[in-house]
Length: 341
Image (cartoon, helix red, strand yellow):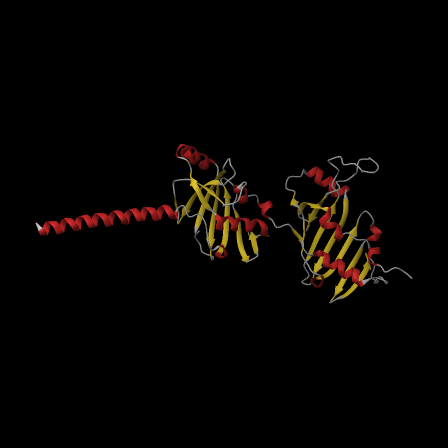
């Protein structure tokens, strides 16, 4: 009897151990598939975002502060930082309600964004998010999580604690919106030459040459250096080319309107050559006064938009820019002259 009693106790202990082992395994699996956050975002080396049925957006880290978009462009640092913040702060708010689960799964099968996150240059993503709709309360959005190619079948409502808004919009997949908006980002000592061509007042156009700190001002088309110039004003002008950005790329402007703007509304062109002989060209064009703004003193309708204008960057991108950003770069040659005695 004693032998059978010991044997029975062993059976009971094995059963208890098995229960806790498998229960722990299930709990670990559940925890793994609800752990949406990534604690070490500094190790993230690549992010791929894909709208179902669309082209992927690939963001690759070149330096801690510089990401490359689709192997072609510099990516917007602010937008990348919003992704990294989301990955770090993601937290499950709750599972999707049982009554809504089936409908949520069907909706996400039809429309979702897939976000793959890679660490330290690895070939496989550490985590893949399938992102659905924002919650009606704007406190998160529905997501699935995939780890090592295995997707958990239950959707969750995921949030960033303390954030109230449309979380899903951070994961946009339009390439032009991911493009960095930089036009110029130079200090005085990094600039070799600037050519400013004024189409509305051609006689005010100028060229500035910077030969290792020796600043020269010339009239466009003339080889002689302009006398009686204030080099402090020239130096101040060259220092204004740091952190100059356009507002947005204009992807959908009609070709007829674009051609009309280019032909009839030329404003000015800036050609900047840096010390590595790289030239950046920004062509500015007036924007018609679509809003019908009037002069506050005369009451007459103004010919142009008073807040924004069009631009073409490097003969390629048609953009919208703001006067407050670029007005400090607009100057006429007389503005560099010292007053005659």
